Image (cartoon, rainbow, N blue to C red; front, side):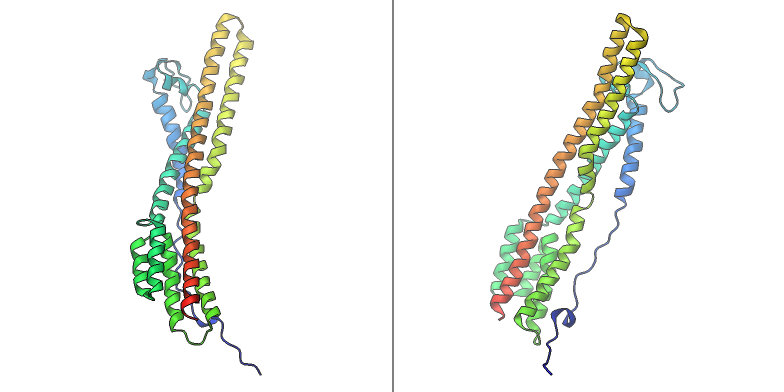
Length: 285
């Protein structure tokens, strides 16, 4: 009976450790931002002292009249305005959260320079020095490279597997480490991509509701007074449009910035895996 060689998966265990998956911000931030949006609309834009005819007993939605400033006129845009303010606050919140996370994932220094240093150490068969470079880099590329280098070092001392099996074990280790890093980079980007479209749609809803209200007043009253009321109503409705466009524009800009940075990290990870497998295959035949 032919003797079978043990495969790489059975011979060695992975050194990759699963990362924590807590993501409370994705649940709390939308609620907090919407509440904050209502508070800004109700108590700052809708400050009774900023209106000529304040409604002091309006409760949840006071009907203040005669705004003294442009910001206070935005209050009259209706109940859609606090939703739009909340959406804008969500864009700001998730942009800050993604910026901090991705900046940490980028690590210290240039990714390309880090990969070149690791290649240099591997060419000199100094795996420990390469691992030290990973500790200095402290980013996602460094984490993936370090996991691969540990397996790389383990495979050098492995005597029962052939070169192809060892290379496969290193490649598998890199893939497992990558699978843990990428979700952390892409997490919460869905909020920015959703708000890119949602901001415009919510603004359109507010604008349409404002126009319906304005033309209803025109039909009921008639005359030059109603025309003036219509002009004011249209102006108020367009505040919804302005807020929605601003929200969507910022969300789209930040989404593209973050995806570009994630692509650079992903490219660095791919280059790291290629470096490890090619180095081992050429030096430890």
